[in-house]
Each structure stands twice: as structure tokens, then as C-alpha cells.
Amino acid sequence: MADSKVRIDGNTLWLPGGVAVRFVRTLRLPETGTHPLPPGLGEFPLRRVADHPDTVPEQWLARGGVMLPVYLREAMWLSFSGTTRPAALQVGVGKVCAVSGRPWSDRLSRDPQNYVVLPRQPWLDGINSGKGTVRQFVAVPLGLGASVEGQVTGEEVWGGVQLQSFPLSEAALARWQEQQARQALVRRAMAPPAPGAVPAPAPVGAPRRAGAAMGLGVGGSMRQEVYRDERPPSDWAEEPAGRVFVHLVTPPEWRRITGETPPPSPVDRAAYTRAGLPWFDYYDQDAEDLALADGLSAVRPVGDWLGDDHEPWHDPSPHQVTPLKDAPGKPVDDGSW
Image (cartoon, rainbow, N blue to C red; front, side, top):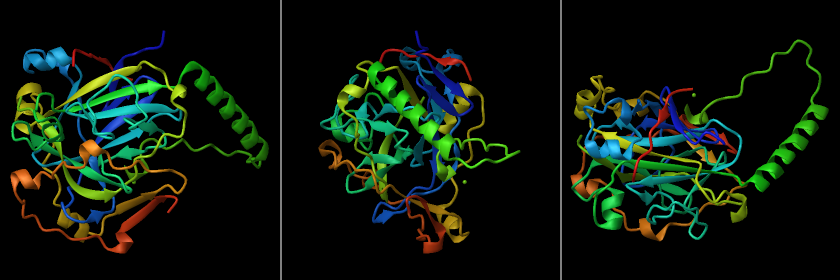
């Protein structure tokens, strides 16, 4: 039987089937306009809830999973990597699907689609807003109603992020492996000889990488597609291979629970742009974007709840926007949630 455990390796979550997920710190976008993809500014540290039984809330022990520290109104994106084998990954924010806007489900749905397809989807920066855009994930405290969960369901019970992976069905996996083998034979037959050449290692991660309960609200919009699944629904397994609950912790709570110093506060976004550092634009001409999810259309940005932050904004210059593509650890305990 395949290992169904979720594991942490450094700051990477590994779900069954070789699905790797990293939580990446980034610049928060203005809540007006549509912007290029902001840069990665390092990974959030991850710790297992089970390793801190005496200091985490009892409810967290029941849910299991992992935790990470995040500042109020800090933005993040999720990087997907680790395998070339296809997988379907559900992403929930407070047990609301970030793709479809529907309540969390233990089953895949196609109408509306409630998952992203890996490795086609290299990352997810926010909730699906259709027309080739997403609205940025931004951390907010529970209790104000500002989270996606609060606005969609009318209550804030769960918070955090939920992940669940589905592998290919046995028949679809066999077809995929046969196709890969044929393609490998073609590549070897066409490859020119290279005496003494040492093959380069495959890149890991997305190319873009060159207590007090918290949830995720939304910030500004950016250009990013959430790709429509091109496989028939029968290609996916009916049961998930693994799942994990990711708790979001304020920096003071992180210090109290773990005894560790939290990361420094996020970098000033205006200073980043003025320094000429890169932003990104990712476009896949062969993929079809999902339409706006009805359940997410009325979600308001965190500024409507917390007020303007008055932080100055400087648009990146065209030469700062880089086009992409066409342009082993301990198992993580799962609990009841």
C-alpha cells in the first residue's frame, strides 16, 4: 500500500504522489488595478503541530497538520513542484475552495472545477477571479468577517489553509506511464551525442523563485490563470491520497508555541520596486482559464475591513517584469476537520 502520510522536508510539504507545496512570502499588491506576479521573498517556516503538544491550542491537536507564522496583512503564494506525475490538488481557505468558492469537499468536482491540476499549475497566488486573474491571498485575523471564509459562509470557524491531493486512477496512470515511455524513446533517438557531457539536474520549484487564529482574505488582482482540467473526470482516483490542515499563527503566538524567533516583517514593497528587482508575467498559450467562481465574486478586499494601509506604491517599470513560459521528513498527523 502506498504511503498516505504528508511529510515536511525543510519548508516543503510533501503530499502523497510526490506533490510538493511551499508557502512563499511576497509583496502585497494594491487593491486597485491588475498587476504582474509579485516576487518570492523567501519561504514561510513550517512546523508540525504534533511536535508542540503542550503549547498549541487543544483544538489544533485534534485537527493535526502543520503551522506557519504570518503577519497581519502579509501576502503569500503557494508554489507547486516536486513531480512530473499528474495530480489534482484541492486548495481550501477556511474550508472554502479557492478555485470554485464552494464548501470543502472530499471529492473532486468538474462543474465547477474545485481543484488545480499539477504540474500544469505551477503556483496559486490567490482565489480564482476569472478572466486570467486571481485575487491575492492576504492574512487576516478571524473574528472580523474579513476572511474569505467569513464572507462566503457568514462565519469564521476554521481559518488556515487546507490541502488535499488526488492521484491518477490506476488505468489513467498506466496510460500516462506508457505515453511517457514512448516520448522518452523519441527523445533519446533524436538527441545528438554529447561525449563527456554531464546532465544538468532538473530544476526544483517554480521558476519564479530565481494561538490567535488567522485566515486568508483577499488583496489586489494579478494576471494569473487557474487552468481548466483537460482530462476526463474518470482519470482521477475517487479517494484522496492525502490531506493536511495548515494553521496560520501570528508571530507572537509562533514565538510562544515554538520558542523560535519568527521571520522579520515583510520587505517594503516600494523599496523593492525602486531597487529594480524583478516582477513576473506567466502566460500559457495552450491552456484554458477557469471562469469566475460565483461563490467568490462578492468577496471584498481586506482594506474594506481594516482600512487603507497608506503604504506608497510604485508600479514596476516594463524592464522589471520577466516573462515566463510562453512569453525526507517526519509524517504530519492528520486529524478531524
